[in-house]
Amino acid sequence: MKRTLTFLFVSVMLLSFLGVTWVSFRLVAYVAAGASELKPNEYVPLFVAFVTAVVGLVGALYTQNRIRKREVDSAHRPKKMEIYFSFIAQVERQMLYQKEELGLEAIDDAELVREMMRFKSLCLLWGSAEVLRALSEFQRVSASQPSPKSMLRSVDALYRAMRKDIGLSNVSLPKDFFAKWPLSNPGDFDRLDE
Image (cartoon, rainbow, N blue to C red):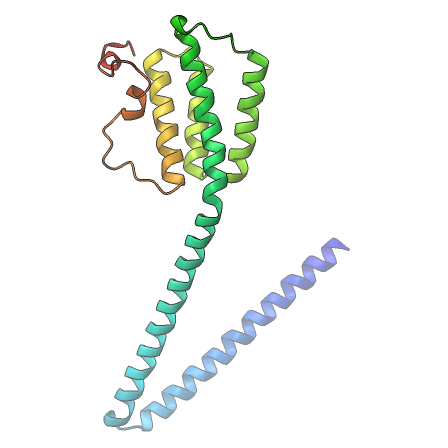
């Protein structure tokens, strides 16, 4: 049954394509035959009007597409911000736990794994391709006994991707900006081992 439906669909699509091609060819031939009988003062204004109409149509379609994309991005932005903020809060919690003077409770590894899996699942549905690549790299680095510097750099790449995904610019931010961000003294970053 599935094969028959597939064959039928392909046949209809092929016949439609051939029909559109034949009608287009006939139309072009008809226009060419009619244009050969016209004088230049008749076909030049027609040609200019045709080109103007095509350019206007293409411009209108492009503008509508951009507006639709902007509306979709705008509608998704609050959800993405919520998802990304949950990850940033987890990283912050991990960083604060490392400071012994704060005396914070130990973070349950099972809870941390659950939160990370939840974040990954939400990114799968809501994150851009750049966020997914940065998250994958972050996981790869995290699983390989990373140096503090490489770990901070993978977080930097992920933060940049998340900011870009919600429409913020990273252009004026220097290299390793977010890697240095959590450190009390950003100059310590340059002294860390690779």
